[in-house]
Amino acid sequence: SAGITAKWIRSELIGELAGSTFAFDAGLLWHPASSVPLNLGLSVLNVGPGLRVDGEPGGETDPLPGRLRFGASYDILGHMRPDGPIRVLVALDLEQALRSLETGSQYAGLELGLMEVLYVRGGYIAETLIETNTGTSFGLGVGLDRFHFDLAREFGVNQLGDETHISVSASL
View 1 (cartoon, one colour):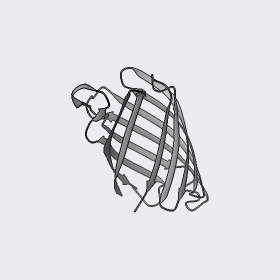
View 2 (cartoon, helix red, strand yellow):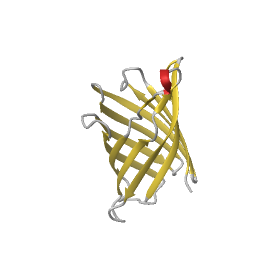
View 3 (cartoon, one colour):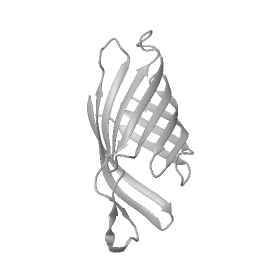
View 4 (cartoon, one colour):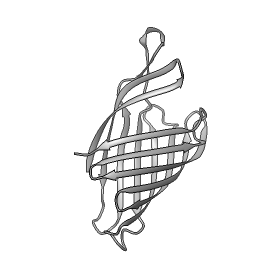
């Protein structure tokens, strides 16, 4: 499978320091064998023009945090009941910054999926940006046919505070 996503990014650090731009993500997903509940993925994230911060002199932009990510997931119950109402996925991701080889992240997570409608997620994050930070994440997702809504919260990873991520998507 292959896909591309267009997104609008808005960042607010302090009331007067806010900016916005658009970006793209692209990815590939591979199922090595139909009888094995394993998925492998490769994606490039945050490709686009820089973030234009309101009030910056000269209208300069800051580069987006472009990333290259490799991931793998395994459905623990998939080999026993591939069409069952409950899915339990274990996922591992490795991420590398496109502009700086010494920065990257590692993610480990668990997802409980119910009836392919409700998803509960939890995970562990280790980031190497300016310094190494680790933390946890928790999320909820709802999927109705081709439409998905996801809400996630990261705790203790960012020096500026906890982060909330909201995603709404529709597939064609």
